[in-house]
Image (cartoon, rainbow, N blue to C red):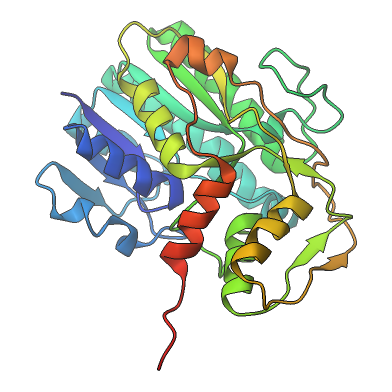
Amino acid sequence: MAKILVTGAAGFIGSHTTDFLLAEGQTVVGVDNLRTGHRENLTAALRSPRFALHPLDVAAPGALAALVAAERPDAIIHLAALVSVQESIANPALNFSLNLQATHLVAEAARASGVGRVVFASSAAIYGDGVAQPVREAAEKRPVSPYGAAKLASEDLLLGHGACYGFTVRCQRYFNVYGPRQDPASPYSGVISIFARRYREGKPVAIYGDGRQTRDFVAVRDVARANALAATRPGLISGAVNICTGRATSLRELAEIFSTHNPGVAAPTYAPARPGDILHSLGDPASAGAELGFKATTAVAKGLAELISETAVPLLS
């Protein structure tokens, strides 16, 4: 079994990845400054003797390097980040600090302590808009936000470090991840978590644009499994793959699925499209299958039904 250091361990994807690794028998060193992560996401993990949480800011110079030197993990899964396109537009300096400078510090910590593998949370945002669908990894990269640009630069930074200093880098280009623990209270949450909260409250959802924009929605439990494979699968070489389903769902279709479970809620309202939003995003999952042995197995309708059931508020009699 391996020792894996997970940055952003108390976050949405980080906590599910931590749980999956622990269930596999791995030892996990969790890192999170709890800026957007929540300690309660790790309730089960904190009961494990193979898990420890360190309240550390990855972007603070020297902090992560000292921890990596002390723990000597076999791999680092770097998930800590500013996770919103809209917030990166509103605060590009924070985006630079959390999404690029922090990645440099992860790369340097791996180099200094001889870590064998780094897994990086990249994004479909690196492709931008107007790319032929489904998107393959070799497609032209045309990010349209500071967030996408920082993710693309971080990939190059890590791959360069890995090639120069002899460690493997796996870049995971997540498409639209959804599932339990995604904070719907944040204005920067994913569309599914926002829809789930609005329908639970009996309120109509707001769709930005005409609702015909499409996304490749991938369940967080599938993403957690993909991260574990990238960190532990023997014989991997450096590279980047899409973490996606290869199936497109429009926002109108998404609202229809929610409506079938919440028939009393009013129809969606429509608002102008937001700057930086991409119209269509559909990934080609073939490379993830070939390189990681990964295939997403959770259909959107099934994943949403489970999410709605898990987050439903019991009726008082």
